[in-house]
Every structure is written in C-alpha cells, then in structure tokens.
Image (cartoon, rainbow, N blue to C red):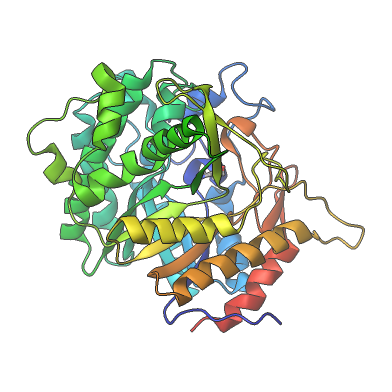
Length: 445
Ligand code: IFM
C-alpha cells in the first residue's frame, strides 16, 4: 500500500495518440496522414515499421476501455485522427470516423473515465501537406478551425477537456528542420518558426470554436517542457542554457500567456523570425483554461554547435537512463512545475505525459515485472504531488502511455505502456506498473 494523497478532483490517467495506437490506416474511410507517407518511406523508421496496424485499437477499443477500467484511472487522454474525420483535411466529413470517437467517448463515460481530447497529435492529413506545405501555409488556420468545429460539434456535449495541439516544438522543429519526424523536411529554422506561428494562430482560432461548442469546456494546449540547467557555471554554458530555454520553453509559452515571442530570441533568429501580422498575438493569446505539459527528463545544456543559431549541446550527466537515452531525474518534474508557476500565470496545470521506455519482457509467470517503470512512476508522481502540496495548481497527471505503441521514428522498438502489447497476436497484458496505477487510484477523491 502506498501512502499517497491526491488533491480533490485530481485526474489520474493514461495517455495515447491516434496514429500510435489505432491502426486501420486505410479502413473506415480514413484518409492518409503525413505519418502514413513518412513511415512508408525507406529508412525513416528504425525498425522499418509503420502505424498501419499498430495496436489495432480501432477494432479493439472496447477491450482497451475495459483494461483502463481495471487500472482504476479516472481519465484518459487520446487524440483524434484528423484524416479519419476529414479524409482530405477539409470538406467531406467521414461519419464513420466520427462515430468511432463518439462510441469511444460513450464507453469511457460509462466506465467513469473522463475523456481528455487532443485535437492535433502530429498526424496532419497528407492532402494538406501537399497543398502548400502543411503548417507552412497560413490558411491552415481555416482548416484547423473546420476540424475543431466538426469534432467539437459531435463530441462537445460529452467531452469537457480539450487540448488543441500536442508538442508544437516537436512537430515543427523535428518535422521541418531536423527531418526526424513527418513530414521529414530539412528546411531551416525559418520554416519551424513559421509553422509554429501558423499552428499558434490555429490554436487561438480553435479555442474560440471550442468555447462556442463546448458548454463548460476546459480548453488548453499541450507543450513539451523540460527544466533547463547549464552544464557548468561557465558564462558560455549559462548563455546556451538560456537560449535553449527560450527556444523550447519560452517561445511556446510567452505568446499564449504574455502575447509576445521572447524579444531576445527574435533578435537571435533575425530574418528567420516569423512575420507577425497585426492582431496575430491577440488571437494567439485567446484565454485558455489550462496548460498541459509533457515531461520526461531535464535538459542539461552546454554551449555547442547544435541547432544554430541556438548553438547548444545536450549533456548527459551520470545516472540512470531509459531506453530512449533519457536521464531519469524525478526532481526535474518538480522543478519545471515550480518554474511554470513562478514565470507564468496559469491557474490549472496538468502533466499530460510522463513515463519511461524500458525493455520489458514477459516473465515465466506470464507477467511483466517492469519494476524500473514502477520506480520511475512512484518517484515522478511523488514530485508532482509535492508541488501540488506546496500550492502549485496541478490538477492531473497522465502516464505515457496506456499501451505499448508505435514510437514514431523508433517504430515498435520502445515500450512505454503500462499495458504490454504482443504485436504478433495483439494480446494485451497489464504490466506491474498498470497494477501500481490500480493501487494508487484507490486514493483518488
Ligand atoms: O510517444 C511520444 C508522444 O507521442 C509525444 N510525447 C513524447 C512521447 C514519447 O516520446
């Protein structure tokens, strides 16, 4: 039995995203997304796989909801595949796709699990990529509004928690600069910043739509945030850490909470900075109800030559690392929560993803004894709740992930789930970390 105290009304859940679990990539009227095209391109995915079948959640969602019920969690964060709902990104609506999500929401509510929807989690309809370069096209704002309108009209009577975008730094920088993720472009910093600006305009406009369509809705955004520390006290390392913090954290928080991009970064980016039109910042700053953030590790940064002009280098201090090569540093979660609270006026915060990939295997007793993940979760949840006890308005915590799934460019080589998936048979097995969640969820109030 764990001594654990959750604040009243705290959401404890697991999280997933459409492309990573659904499969059925060409069924039920779904159109192609940029991840279908990217994962089918030679050499893009470590194990040569794709999300065609993934966890087959599209067919097995009833079983998956039952499994979540047995974890005792009271919330589930999942995303909507844009191209399942609007196969060409705009225009014709695929009713079958909408029905899939509607049924899922009903089953969750019947199981007393609060649905927490993310509209966009990396899987842009391919058609929108082909027409003008996806997020590089300013008019994508209208497309995103249409998507938000269609989905919230269908689900807004039952879904109260809505996040517009997941991890905008990742899908813009890794999609348009480093090319590690779909659409796999290597265009330069200007492209990432332009894509971010358009995505942020789309976010603001979608918040307005959600506000109109969802009675008593709680609307927000999900950003990847790490606590940043300089690798040493040298002035160069301190300056690099500061640049990295502005590039990854502040560039994504300041527009929403302060209505501006960090001035210092605008200067550093120079001609690559996005063109901001009058009223853009008013739209981007549309008031939201919560900030969701995803956190897995801290960032220890030295001066270097990565990501010019940010010119930084990530340092890996000695310690424990997950299969992703990410340092296990639970205090980082507490520190970033404090950092958010001290720097931004946010009245509701959710940890929308936190978790670890480890090389799980089925033991002779048929179970998955993922003790390292259990330890990771205990320590991170403790740090999160410590922040809440100190008055930081933390309202919920989601483990990444519900099921083992398609980990983007790593394919199926990394297992993050609290439920194991045998990809040959699609059999699910609750891991010890899942039983741990079931144990602590008894303390929810
Ligand atoms: O799997 C991803 C997820 O889609 C977004 N946040 C990080 C996770 C682990 O890499």
